[in-house]
Amino acid sequence: MTVSSNRVSPPPAQAGVSAVVLAYAAADPAAAFRAIDAHAHAALGHALCTVNRYDAQAMRVVRLYSSNPEAYPPGGSKDKNGTAWGRHVLLEQKLFVGEGEEAIREFFDDHDAIQRLGLRSVINVPVVYGGVCLGTVNFLMPRVAVSDADVEAAQLAGLLALPAFQALQPQG
Image (cartoon, rainbow, N blue to C red; front, side):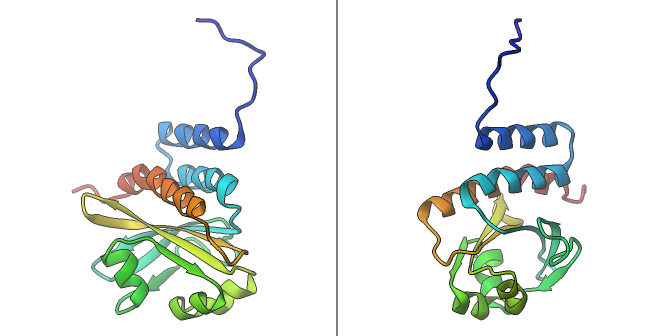
């Protein structure tokens, strides 16, 4: 095997995938979430990424990762019982796109904090395996409009997160 020292650096998106690969090789879900955030940022330009584990018995989400731990620290949780968002994303396992301040206000109790950060749109991706929602990967952007390409990039990030969610499942 020949290794070239003249190798060209991969484009940012490919470098992001390499970081995800390395995190999984090291069996490090936290590093995988950071790498997925960085990888998705190349396509989405989001200002906040959070990853939440879904506790179906309590109908709560618990934050595992945040790109802004000062505003949204890991370990924080939100009750989603009886909410339209919880039904749509967690129970029906459908992607949620919220565009504009009204959508943020309608669906999120922490809308004031979101708006203080200058965030005006959101994509919430349910991470589902075998018909079971394991959690969500969430991207919040300062722009109001979300494109189809944004949705596809967010969905891909959700798929990349699946092994990390599976690794964090209780062994039974």
